[in-house]
Amino acid sequence: MTYYKCLLLIIFLSISAKINAQEEEKTGNPIFKEWYADPEIVIFDNTYWIFPTFSGIVKKQDFMDAFSSKDLANWKKHDSIITPKDVAWINNELWAPSAIEKDGKYFVFFSANDIQTPDSYWWDPQKHDSTEVGGIGVAVSRKPQGPYTDHIGKPLIGKVLNKAQPIDQFVFKAEDGIHYIIYGGWGRCNIGKLNDDFTDLLPFEDGQLVKEITPENYVEGPVMFYRGGKYYMMWSEGSWGKDSYKVAYGIADTPLGPFDRIATILESEPSVATGAGHNSVLRMPDTDDWYIVYHRRPIPNEHRNHRVICIDKMEFNGDGTIKPIKMTFEGVGSIPLKK
Image (tube, rainbow, N blue to C red; front, side, top):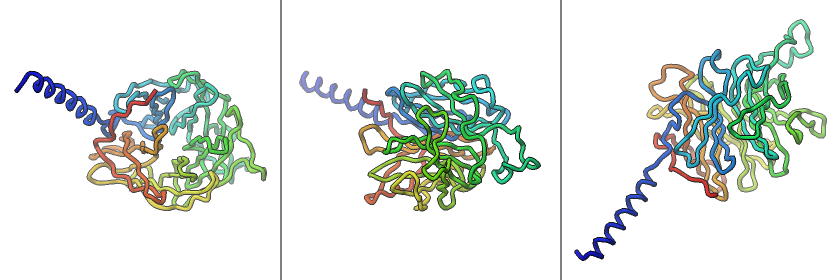
């Protein structure tokens, strides 16, 4: 073999090795080794961010961490970006963050204190605990990693409306330019309109502060995104502490629905994991490539709080419906964001 042929062979093998290394680099599932749940994935400042719930017992679940990555595969942990030191009214059970950037500020909406007062008790002094404080709050920062401070000094939504517990909020900017907040537990889902500085809700034209948009079999964990001229709403069904937990979805022409249930797309797979649910969605900028980020329970599972964060590809059929999602251990490939 001549010198030049050897040189070309060496170059070819070197390039092939680099390509194979890139192809082999995967996020892996779970993407974090610690116990986390309820992940919110967003892109801020050309960086991927995941804001999850720490999945522990209630007395130890009073803080939030965040994770950042430039390629989806390698993550940096940012400890305790929100704690009771930052939001004085938080007592326990801080969970289900939703993050969004607006006007150079970063907002994290969160659930706290797990309030239990039904709306049917709201005006009954014999049944209503007027001292109960909790619900959906807002924290704000100049940087995605914090430090965050309490934005309004009290819950944004601090009582039960339409029988929906004020938890599991998702904030979404629709095509009409309005920022909507979709939320709700106890099998009920509400939608409201946020004002310009995220300090309050704007009533709808009929005077309602929120409207109920509960789809069939809804339990909690709503997520909304826009694709192909349609609004997609995803939600969790079943019980969060059991194998019945899963994700379903519907499609509508507006954020207000109605969102008729179409199908289940993510659920337990005994050979992989159980309790898959409470997801968020990532669309790669300037593409039609989509990913689902969710939590699940690895097998064997020793506790209902043993939940981990995973990511898998989300694909669509030609008619716009979502294909069933197969959970993997590999996750997806490393995807550096373009500058």
